[in-house]
Length: 541
Image (tube, rainbow, N blue to C red; front, side, top):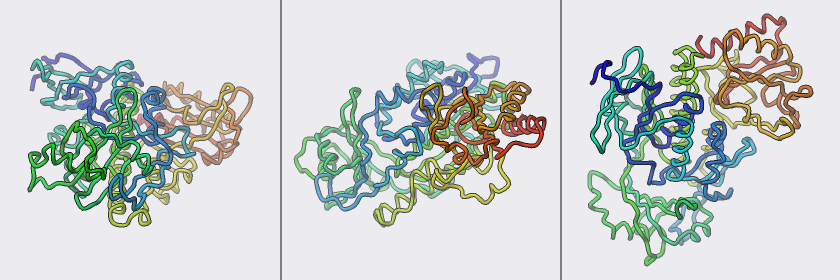
């Protein structure tokens, strides 16, 4: 490793890995004024479709980052009634619908809808928006070594074309370098979970089968017939590229190699999945991958953090892998930004692991269960609700001020059952602002936000004192109060957030509730001190 005197450039955050989650955290950081350097060993954004859908919760995150419209311009059609079918073949008999519930994508609990955009269509949007916000991306560049100390990370990166090496000094480093993360390995971070579930050959291809998918009303199919069994996925096209498809079949790497899957055999397997023996098929890409369930034993090691597949891998059932990684990126980004801006103490960063690793354990366990239920029990045996898994969990500890009865709450449940408890997602309600209808979620995104009831004037005054004392930018809104305040046509704010008209709720930049007081306190000075103490506690100041 080069010593500090040989540093070529200094950055606040070095992100290693510029795929879906690496691009996401880079965008989120840049939107908060922290301009990271991103290195990605591949020559550009993804050419494989991989992740094929974004849930409503993920679109809320991108909406808060200001890029929902850009994603909508690229997204393909995604009907509400798409299913995950179990069939003999795409053209054959349909046995079961294994995903009739699409509420993780379409729910009245969110102001936005999910979509079926694939990774190869999404990543160029994220790249463009991250670069416009100030992130620097270097493709064909890989990390070849790093050292950490109490003040930061010294990393050596290499241009894979020219061979030029550069030494980068960063305050923090984010490992978004995938399931075989070299960063995780060097740090000696183990993994836990069920491990390898199976190995698969994945065949991306083109064929004229869109009408067959429409006939089955399917977004994807599991198939089983005399020739083969596996899954068949549709990646709907846009103006950027036409429809493409993917067939996955199980293989045994101890008995087979890629040489056992020449083009002729792949075409035969694809035709068996489709159910038309002579249909023209054009192979685009064939690769192997491991379906596994593993979670890193810790998501932080000093000034290095793991996100996405570096931190957690899970089966694709329910489509929650990439969605969970994007939520990890959002959680870490606001905390890194707060620390780097001097608004929070460095101990805030430890709450990333405290909050997100239990979610990773829970999500992975639920997705494995969903996969098993689909395989062995069919639709009648499915108990996993992907809306609850993706939007209904809470943070029992972390950057929150818990309430006295918080120990008795469930870890996850239907999102509408949460009513403002610290550590839960702030609820979507319809508001009126400057004559326009907006969502409560549109108030969140980069700063702390204090919401007070119509009788919460004392909290408004206390918040102004607290933010001045702490030099902390904060937005303050009275909901359903007087002229000039934000209207609440449905009069549901107090119930949704579990407060009285004189109460207050503090929402974090990621849209999760950090603290609430159900009513005003007795003394104005006491309220001012309460808010200063709450913010200092959450921000570890």
